[in-house]
Length: 331
Image: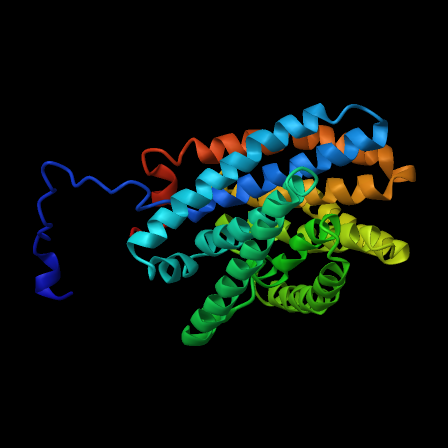
């Protein structure tokens, strides 16, 4: 043992008075994952109300609450970015930040779908902006991955959000009459999703995910559900049913391994459960037929679970607790 190691360590004295962090300077990207789940839940509720012939007021109310919430969160992160643009690279270095930033752009796409029937002009602008932001984030992530050592480039479920998340724009594209864009998004993201599933399977065989990161495995449900949704909207019924089956295989596997996945207890990464649950619900409801009752049952679960998880995560945003736990960078 080095004698110098036995010496008492000297730490810098704490700042007094404590340094005040500027407004929004440490906005944690982790807020966007549960907000994306809430946006997906609003879409699922709208589909369910139309399916059972009930007035759309409840769905409009939820959308009217969630879209402004996403807009405020996006403004908060934009304010952080304006203070130090390079902070986005710092947030991309950690998985909660990486997932959250992708969810931010995907949330803009989902919000555009909710706005399209009422303000198509604003929805069009928001959709284009969200796609551009998502593309920029994907390019920045690729640049970051190239610079990392091999261990830092290992595939993980957040890759779906960053590189397949463009598919979330397809429903809004169809509502706006941009069928060609929706078709292109479907066929361009499909092989990427398949590649990530394959690489993730090989990765899982080599290394079991560490306990804190296991909730991220739920993200694998989302691309299959989204492919089922978009295929159904495009009239590809057989493909839609096949992707729904794949999503159910993933979901049932997670349920069977529920204790193993959630052994770390409730953490901000539980936000990863919300959007896959909402997307799977939408996929079932769009299939209708024998899937109507299971879809409505899943919606009932989502109406309880998704807001509960979102509240648990978002209430830790004020005061900086969420930023500390998720290693959010400060501008």
